[in-house]
Amino acid sequence: MKAYDTDLRQKIIHAFHKKEGSYRKLAKRFHVSISFVQRLISRYLDTGSIKRLPHKSGNPAKIKDEHYPILQKLVEENNDATLEELCVKMERETNIKISCSGMWKTLEKLQLTRKKNLARRRTRHG
Image 1 (spheres, rainbow, N blue to C red):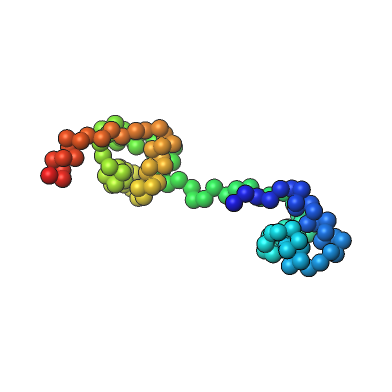
Image 2 (tube, rainbow, N blue to C red; image 1 turned 180 degrees about the vertical axis):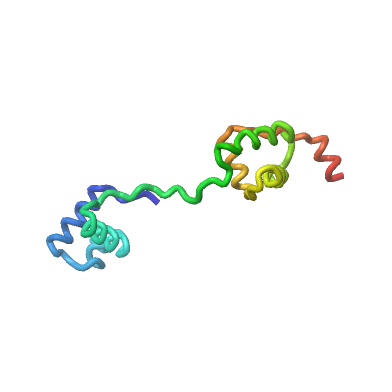
């Protein structure tokens, strides 16, 4: 969901100062949620700011910069390993338990690709 424009925020604050209605009426008038109006006005009264808050980037990555050479070596030595296999090997090397999606994101970030070895896969499943 996209953040509301500063212009809309200013209009809501202006209407609040003119006492043009309750939070509920302001929300209905400007087609926003009541909680947005409450948070906007509360933040404005506390800090004087109506700027949008910076995006929070979520959980920090488990694999740090110092582990990248280890991961790169693992991928080079096991370029046909599955994500699950790489996660297990990485845990053995660094004691860092990482999910498959976390491994995939890290590989993409480092632009490390894995080659598929179809002959090995056939013998593994056959």
